[in-house]
Image (tube, rainbow, N blue to C red; front, top):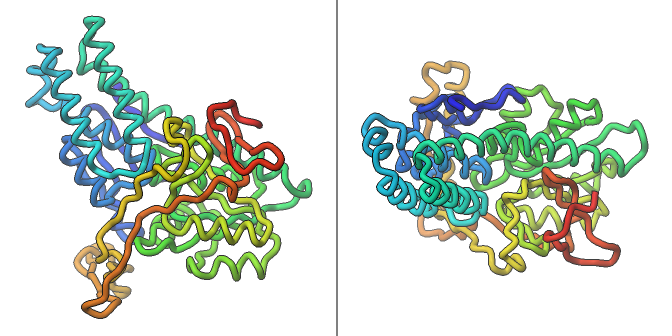
Length: 386
């Protein structure tokens, strides 16, 4: 398998054609589209830590493929192919390094565990370790696309079945959970895409998602490219929106880590959306591949929440408005603007944890989990309900 990519959407955030990996620099979106070559695990680590690539599934895939690119490079290929023990030691060391890039999303650690098992199996069976690793990393890319399409299908059917037959749906989503956060199609935004493709979507509202503005920058970009009818709303306006428009059926979000009982870590602001949905009687749906479910974690209390630099709150970055029309000049007019006065401190958790009892359903590529009547928690060790 020398080339794997997604052709399910017009967007491609990850480009892999053995041995070359390139990612769309998401710090420049939506006003400039620029791909970065990722030739090593150090490049992958940097891209993940700086959020040039983000989204739990995409982080795992970029990490895996960055090391594949490094293994296939001219400097390493012949030496490591000739010595499987040296290759296994090198791969395991670099995977441990990649694990330090971001702490919250479980997909990265799940991918690392599986890749280490692949290396171990190849070593003990006498197969070429480098070839086995690269094939496994490529398979993860292809599998993520298929998983996201299944999530979109199951989620669209679940939401559509909950109302009047033939009625078009309004949905609200948070952060960016589409093709830019995955290998293609997306999780929560994948459900929106599937509803739109089925002709069942009237409108999607999406939050700006402060402080990094993944909604205003990235989800807006995806929805414009896909020509899906949409409106951007301030994070603080969601409760007013739900109150003023009772026809909004559901809030659909992604997940970075889901505990066995259904407690879900996702982008900061998710918890307050779940509270608003509960108060206004709307469905609150989590969309995530099973690789985001941490069955070893009993509850959300054990999830490590990444805290990022306070400068992301105190300072905002963007492009000068007069430079947007001139793409040849846009990068020269990117600037940081300080919002808060000097001396002010800020708290900047990247994620929060939504309790399972606020979650109406968890949609995976295997089906939809719903709680038993009267239950406040899920048991994700069981098979999906729907």
